[in-house]
Image (cartoon, rainbow, N blue to C red; front, top):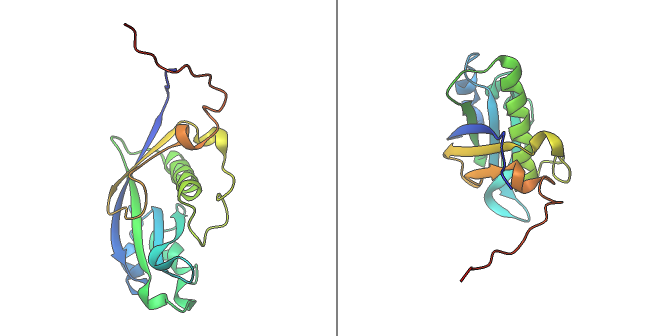
Length: 167
């Protein structure tokens, strides 16, 4: 089977930022993308991936500040990492927004952070089948490479034959 038409989404991760540093993520030209929140979870322990979110119509700093992370028992220990998409050409805002949404959806589905509810048990399967994410930089607990081909139903009906050595 030959797999074609892969849409590559590359994300460069930087951090950590604290909740007090969200003003550093307010650039109206570049501060859009995906973000992760790490902190303490009563079951999973300290400094674990809690949440994956997106910011595509407002800056990362503005979006993260709206979610109430400062109202938790562990707010002083939260670590924020931001992922900005990059590639060989700058896409239109519409394509960029779509890539952010697809990347967030696939990353949540694959990593299943404790505080995310959407996309944990279902994803837009057809939309994600040809998405391939490369995480660069400080992606921490995120897998360096995530493929929609692997995590969707794309190969479910494929019939395979076991390879055999020919003498």
